[in-house]
Length: 95
Image 1 (cartoon, rainbow, N blue to C red):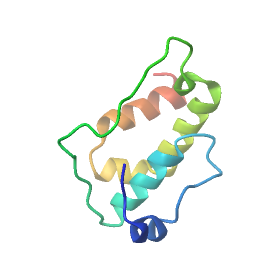
Image 2 (cartoon, rainbow, N blue to C red):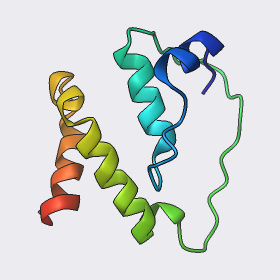
Image 3 (spheres, rainbow, N blue to C red):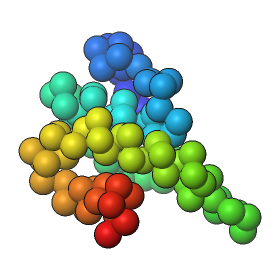
Image 4 (cartoon, one colour):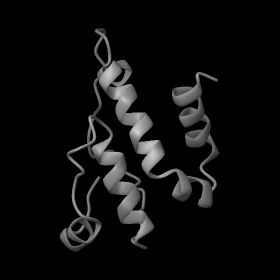
């Protein structure tokens, strides 16, 4: 992700109180303030997935996801982010 400095400052930078998902939180706040996001059609970075346990499945990450979804529930609902709302439901009520 590449963002203009003004957008980062306007959105309030990272919420360090979240145990994880600080990046999701900031990008959501940036987009909610009216900034645009675009996809660059060329590969700019490589992602390597290792064979050990993913940090995204840890209890700390699950708590971070739940807190992110709780914090942005109305934005996700307003923008029709059903996949994220379904994940929030699974995290909070075990659906």
